[in-house]
Image (tube, rainbow, N blue to C red; front, side, top):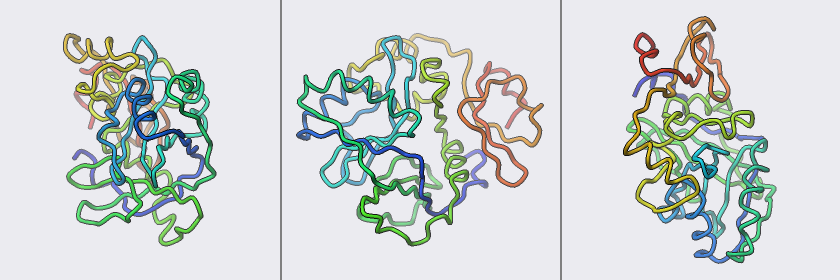
Length: 256
């Protein structure tokens, strides 16, 4: 994996994260999510979560988040700046599925583990490669205190970028489609059937020719990425800066 030497392992309190409980019977919440989000929620179980997205009818990404099924609850794990976008989109559909929403005051712990390292019983895998795995633990009662902050929030974010997960910030909502950010490889299921924006996203998958894309670039001087649009936040580890860079595909030919 490119840049895998920069992956750091450990646990971190993720801090500015909203935990949204979609309250209803299992199938009702599942059916609601299946018709809206980009991932296939039928694959979620007690220890397997998902990274996912919500798009508009034109296939542009509105927000990124994680979905987990934790202690018999469907939970959406999303950054606080984006939570209102998710809630505004999903709330108008709730009466049709007999589902309600509740914001939980739970701490979210992020883990980066080596592949041979076992997860805790209530941990949820969200992303994995042949080198590392990322997982979440919902700490509702503030019980988990071991080894916290061995991993920094910056390193957690860098790990996600190294593993190909390029996420949007609030100011980027509605500007990019999944293929432009590489999310068609990580956050979209093309086997699940219809979801909001699916027709356009599927057309890009099977008929479109991708001319621009997003890749992780590591650099030390801002001039090195001046020809690209930076997606999301950039992070620095010692003297190396990590940015998700969007641009013409041939612009990456001389980049890492």
